Length: 146
Image (cartoon, rainbow, N blue to C red; front, side, top):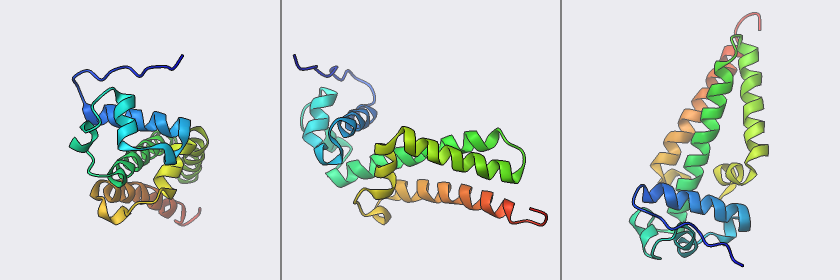
């Protein structure tokens, strides 16, 4: 018996579509993602995804952005539990690796999916925030006596 997706009920359609897309990726990989399939998984009409994503590339960029934001937040939380510069950098590295091991599909989306990154402002913004966080941690370790 095939498992039927829960139908979407009024709320945040974009979040429901992204959630459905992540589920499809876990099952089939990125190659199985189509706007029609995520609509089916979310229990909405096949045209509904076009309200938020003009193409599969827009969807992939949104998925990569969400994944990068989750990774960055995990790094921030890990770093926030430490006080010394070296310990903070080690915590960041562990959080980064932990994310890659726990969510390999999201990690691959973030850094290896084929889409024109510079064409997606939210991805660029999230990438810049993440890169700045890591750069600051490295710079803090480059000070005298470290």
